Amino acid sequence: MQQHIINAIDMYVNNPHKACWCDWQLYNHHGETGINRANRLKYYLIVSQSAYAKQPLSLYVQQRNEDDFFWEVLDKFMQKKMDSEFLRKICTTKSVESSKSSASQLNLQFFESEYNIKMSGQYKVDAKLLNGGNKSTSSLRNYINTVIPINFNAKNGSSDNSTSYSPYTYLFVNKSSGFDADESGITVSENDLTQQSTIKQSAHVIRKYLCKKDKVTLYFSKDLSKNNKMRELENYAAEVVYASIWQWFLGGRISTSLLRLNSSNEVAGICSKGLPGFIEFASMPLDQALMHKGLVSIIFYAYLLFEDDLHIKNIGLTTYYSGRLKGKTTAFAKIDHDYLATNWNPGGGYFVTQFPESKIREVVKSPLPYTFVQLFQNFRFSPGTKNGFFLQLGHTIRPKPNTTRCSAHASKFITGLLQRHYQRELKKTVEDFKLKCKEIDLLEEHVNSVFQQLAVYKLPDSKAKNMTKVLIKRIKSVALYGN
Image (cartoon, rainbow, N blue to C red):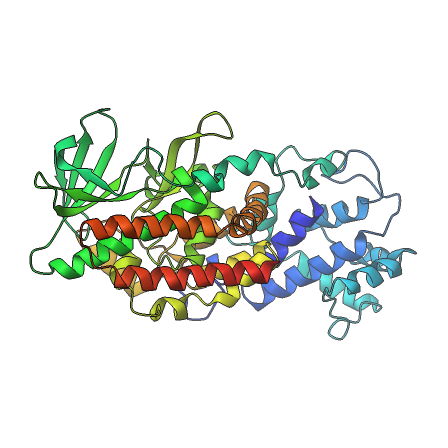
């Protein structure tokens, strides 16, 4: 639990949504004062871990133990009751010197050059600083509260440090079953579908079909344009392959892209196979949405695989069968894979620049909140991306649904990712990524079989092959760095 709290402070300091004088939502941000406050709190928490004395029990402590000072520091900070004498006692307790030495080995910053903590006057300055701040969405206190359960007490807090990831394995799939087992190939015939309606809210006209056989499965399809036929067929090929790569890692939580065939067995459009019970992120209250698992893994792979259209209508909850759980479960999922396919240029171009490999490497090397939060700076759309004022305005007045996020929404989402179940999911995501990459040849074999099927329908595949080459190289490079 203590490490989760330290992680929360690090994530607060490294939050990409910093305050600036021209930000009309300044209240929902934190500036240099807030960052200084966070660093001082971290300092006293680290030092206090070896400082033990018989003091009154705190809000989080039911029974005295060697970590009491840590929880007392946290208690006083949360209640804005920090006092200079208490800080002095922490820093002059007999065992503190060993704590400083240990912490230095962890490369933690104590700012002795900036703050001379041996002077009593400095304790008063720090106490005043720590008692400041507000309780807004992106305040330091809110970050910490996100980590601490309502019924938590330090007596049994040690159980929260468990590194067992068994409850998270259902989010991932076995290497041999990472693709849509219900589909025999990459096509679906109009003869097997019944058109239900037409949807015009998207950037394209979408036809909604129902599977005649099971009368449950939905397909959302775009028609092939006669004016740009070859270009669209090229994009179709790339989208089908791209969806397969996503499914290799996350299986049934990723929608399948299929070619739609007409009665003459010719390609007439492309379909996205609907996910069971899919509920858009956009239609859920944020607090309710953040109760469910699966968000972290989707964001991780979105960055890895250059997904720059991860807006709040393209992710949501689905109910699917998990072989590992031997039953149905609910978790976050992703739909709509056409943005990368449509906008891909040879070598990756914009996407390679927009999603530098160095950031995802750092997450794989150190799967912690403060490395993970840096990914949000690069997304064009995501639940944790702050969109500019004019982009928000444009989406508000257009007839299509608004998929932008303001600073308050983005900050609240990022704070929500501090929950311990998401911190554990991040570690499990990286662990599973490394495991799958040890046998990435299975993915390459599957992708090759997809290209063979595309050739049957004479789809141009140069874009898809170039995209695949860049993505596989990136996956291998990131996995190698993490080992």
